[in-house]
Length: 475
Ligand code: C2O
Ligand code: CU
Image (tube, rainbow, N blue to C red; front, side, top):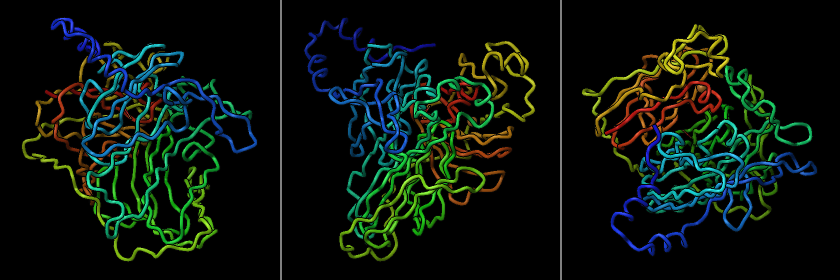
């Protein structure tokens, strides 16, 4: 079930046409390298030891946490030669981008995993403006937890920042968590632990913002700031708020929304939100960026640190909406209806599921490190959950028959949230990852306009590997 890689396609095409190697060499010289390899980072607060991580860097600089921010304008091309310096195979997924299927980075479905020492050329157009990210998509439950993730920012074709009512400046805020030992080293014994996977996933004990557990985000009094919030954690759901500041939500998973005031933002793993805040604090003051660590225990994970410079004149009036760019053209009346039923996990009622084509009981599943199923199948990838002709509207009912929340992600497409528990969704937000609460039923719809094989999985990465994954084919 492994399709041809872009590289082998190119190789066979040029062999057939006997094209001299020059174009490939020219390309090789210009494509920037994204190096994945071991690195160290100051994850625990200053004064503690450095942590050995796996990180993205460039050819000439060591990997950083998070990986280097990739920034293009909408419609521009992203080119990166992944160079694998890890002790295991890897691949890069460009999360949320409506991408050419061959570039999607879903190891085992859209490309072969990239072996240690090998490279793979990613080359694609980023069509839609918004806040995205990139991360490992092979053994992601381990590789992302070790640090392999970075921001991918697609700017509006016409700059929004600086326009009337818009932000005056923007900042990327990538959040994640780490499970560290007292020494500051990554706790490795729990990698692959089915108990974590059958519960809420492998949660960390340290939250970092832009790679620091004591991050200070410098702001200036009077600014109107756009914060691009990204939850890169493998399992942690992050409710967020900023002490003393009202936030206006302007985008979710890259999609503009009509600006709306919001007290707190809840980000499931992989979700993004763009918010605007007016920096009403005094020069020299600080305000806490807080995460609910569970059961309404809010902890500071970073500080907005006001500079001492004199305030700039405040921006008055409502926040300018982002330009609406994508037309979804959903045809709900003639939609193809599909259903994904989530089952399993601790405290669930799943008795068994199909594993490698065989009905297996829960004990057999656990022995094979599976604890979850979609439509009665515990993560087998032989057959797609469904196929849709190109251009068809697909209406998917996501039914969570488990005691746990899940963040369900569709590759290659964006969808609209139609209903929750049968009630029309107030906002009909468009997203690429949707939070589904325990026992909740969420209906979504999307235009299947991107041909290829696309994953559909829980973005709690331990759930994904333990059975919450399938795929669909368009075209
Ligand atoms: Cu963000 Cu299948 O991934
Ligand atoms: Cu899940």
